[in-house]
Amino acid sequence: DIVMTQSPDSLAVSLGERATINCKSSQSVLYSSNNKNYLAWYQQKPGQPPKLLIHWTSTRESGVPDRFSGSGSGTDFTLTISSLQAEDVAVYYCQQHYHIPYTFGQGTKLEIK
Amino acid sequence: QIQLQQSGPGLVKPSQTLSLTCAVSGDGVSSNSAAWNWIRQSPSRGLEWLGRTYYRSNWYSDYAVSVKSRITINPDTSKNQFSLHLNSVTPDDTAVYYCARGGLSWALDCWGQGTLVTVSS
Image (cartoon, rainbow over all chains, first blue to last red; front, side):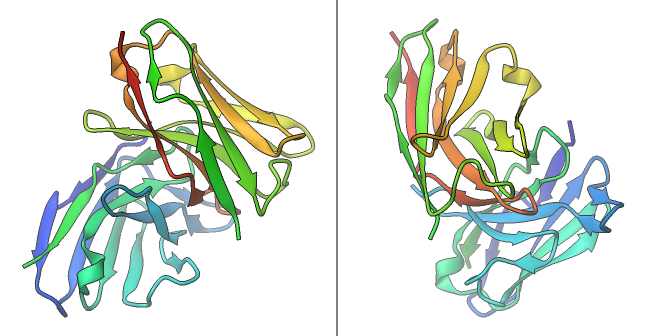
């Protein structure tokens, strides 16, 4: 199985500041036939299911604010929130959506400083 | 708008079978561009993908090795829903269970509301 490791485990950022979450996979999630990295990011708030924010590393879902962006390739990926808003407080997960079984990172808890 | 509505018991006795259903609206379980997944979440295991079923001229299923001997995911095209059956459960199977749709990229773009299933006598 591909192991997904996120850092940090928790993060406190001031409102309006940048938040950066990292994710590393134990194997490449690049699918050579379409040159896409199958890495997704989810946001989970208490009592709710995870919500897909980004797939294929950097493709934002419809309705997701453009302050959320994803980058990376191969085994190293980053989720960036350019200007933290109060409603962004949540746990964030990365997931590789290429190899079966799909696997998730352990989560990064994002709070307001 | 695609919606997934879960149903099933919240308490299952050890050694029995956990059964949950996910009713789909706004899409078809026989869609050639979607897959239908079950995931669970617990403090000890985090988010754990359990398996999926999907239709590409034929029905296919994939399961996590950790539950492969105990799990079945079945589509029900007449009711546009899919189900999870996990047999021989133990307290270690206690978790919040989610159904979710995998879209064109296979990422999980729509989730059910979640069902807390407790395994206890």
